[in-house]
Image 1 (cartoon, rainbow, N blue to C red):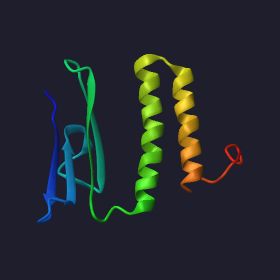
Image 2: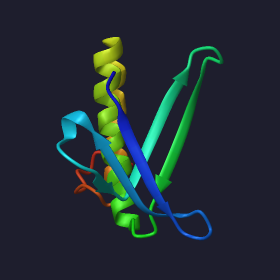
Image 3: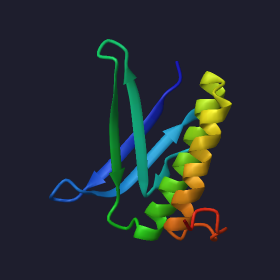
Length: 113
């Protein structure tokens, strides 16, 4: 069985100061991160559960990029897991819209209307 480990260093108010993760195929030792999103499908409740955490040092600009890149990876996962190419492309279009509006990627003029 493979494991992915997450470790948190919390401040006195239980706000993450540091986030570390470790996985067998990620190289030796703990790796530091500023944010993570975890989504888990509960098949009994037919419901998604999620956990989103970020450190105090995560900047707003970094968070915008993180969301943009997460939308793109969600599109890839949707396409791989369902063969829904059209909906994956629609999600990529939304990611582009989001990225432009948030200043993460250059404006193409595609979404100015």
